[in-house]
Amino acid sequence: MLETTELPETAPAESPARRPGRAILLTLLSANLASAGAAVLVNIFAASYVNQLTGEAAWAAAAVVVAYLPPLFAGTYLGGLIDRKLRRTGVLAAELGSAAATVGCGVAITANAPLAMILALLGVRSLLVAAVRNSLTRWLKLDAPEPLQEGRMQLFILTILLALPTSGAAMGWASNDADRLSERITAVAIVFHLSALALIACLPSRPERVVPTDTNAARRLEEGLPSTVRAILSDRSLGLVFVACLFAQPVFQAAEQVLVSVKGSSMGTAGMARMQTAGGVGLLLGFGLLQLVRTRGIGSLVTVGFVTLGLACLLLTARLNGEEFVLPAFLGMTLVYELLDSYFFARFFAQSPPDHVARFSITVTNLGGTLMGVSAVGLGLAIDALGFSHGTFAFVVVSILYGLALLWLARWSARKV
Image 1 (cartoon, rainbow, N blue to C red):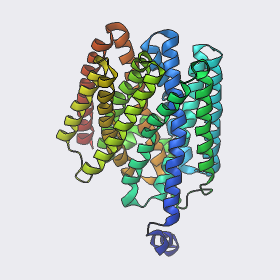
Image 2 (image 1 turned 90 degrees about the vertical axis):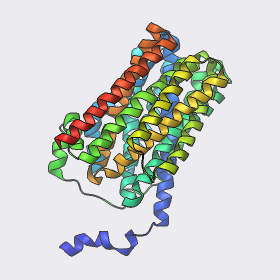
Image 3 (image 1 turned 180 degrees about the vertical axis):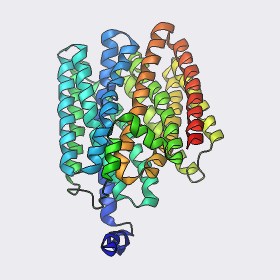
Image 4 (image 1 turned 45 degrees about the horizontal axis):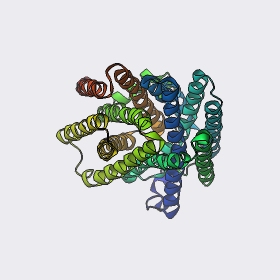
């Protein structure tokens, strides 16, 4: 009995990097880029629409919040289902549902539907987007040899971040016809969804390697978000990386979403598209810089240095007016965001147990996303109350205090374990 269970692990065909494995990796990355491109395009357009509709940055940020709240509270159960029953048909169904919700959002915006209806459609869509992304994440974990998992996850994160310039180029094209902007953006998003569906259909019916879940552990983790977070923090190393993941997204991605939606709107649709493109260039540069520093790791002092640089670029983006100054500053901020977010999330992914990777990944992604949404609302309220310059300065001060609180949590969790 022991010999039969060990055969799949020791068989020679499993050890080398197989050509089919590389083909599956390319399919997973491409499908995620297409799916994320649709998600980012609709989210940013919806936030910009809400900002124009209400005239308040806080409401624009609220559109970001609903992209993370449903997956946060349903995520541990959804992740558990993905960990146990990952199949190609399930990923296809989730992407198809996301496409239907995208059409609903486009129709609602075109028809000037009530704000509550638009936010509800965004919330439903966010749950389906989370299902697709975390299904592809688990598939990547099962398909990649352990030494390659961190590097492949960095590529996976890069496809998510590249959705920003991809959607920026699409928005630039759509802005050529302002009278039909909503219809054109919806059409482009549907093309992204169809591309994702075609790529997902090329995957096998299920991952080649299957890791059975521990039913007792799964039952315990399915109790909800608090027990999942406790399970993550119970592993000292994984818990420290988890805490590190919760800084970059709530600070830099929140600023990115609000700055693109609010300041980008003041620059016009074409200016907003250029801002997204500049952010994409920053993401690529951040990824390139990460390849230079990842072998030596990023220590605490280097992390503090990058955070300081990112916050300085955030302030410059908010305070400066000309595009020739705003775009380079925004590029610098997104560079720092990509570097820190990809480094720590890839480490979290590599250290997560394979039988709980979807549950753990969806938790860190959506907990960070919800904190990001709350942070974005806070930044929006600060801008509405204090103006752009003073509001962003207050946001930076609060971000520094938030980072210090996370450092305390990391030390406390390490001592407790």
